[in-house]
Image (cartoon, rainbow, N blue to C red; front, side, top):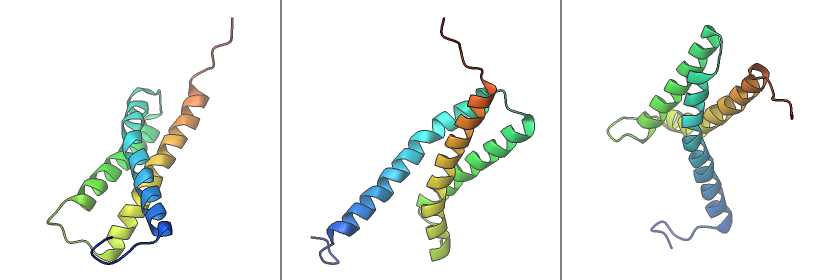
Length: 107
């Protein structure tokens, strides 16, 4: 029982899914960084991906940093916007990697 009263099973499930998505996004930061650094990407695409990743990391740090005033809109945008951006970037980098890196033929 929480201080604000009981919480439904659906609310607990929503919170756990939200935390799981954030956990996945946090784990994907390093593979994203690795792919940005070591894939043979065009300079402009590399710069765009690096800027997006740095922006997401700074946004996440500021979102959870104490002492910063956040409007409700900024908190909602950060909390629900940062994980999909990081996960989407990972998927995009995998697609780009698949196009750039030739498949090895089975010998």
